[in-house]
Length: 77
Image 1: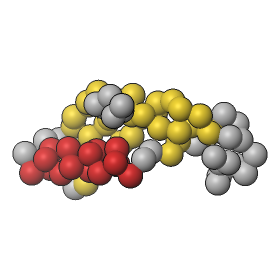
Image 2: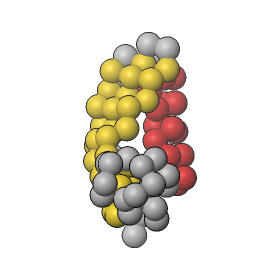
Image 3: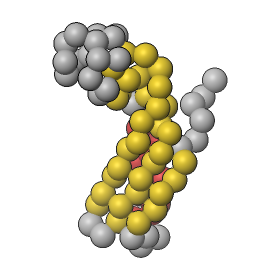
């Protein structure tokens, strides 16, 4: 797909880091599967992956975690 940020690059499969913060909780997900722009590096995460990250972050908030760094689950086949 064409990048909506730079309008020049095409995206390709890659990985990114996603940081989510709410209140006193910060959760960092590393190696998140994404489509990454070859020109500017903007990353696009699928709806399914986003839902999973948000669910895990919500569990961290409920557990009163302050800082958590996680490896993202592999992309579904």
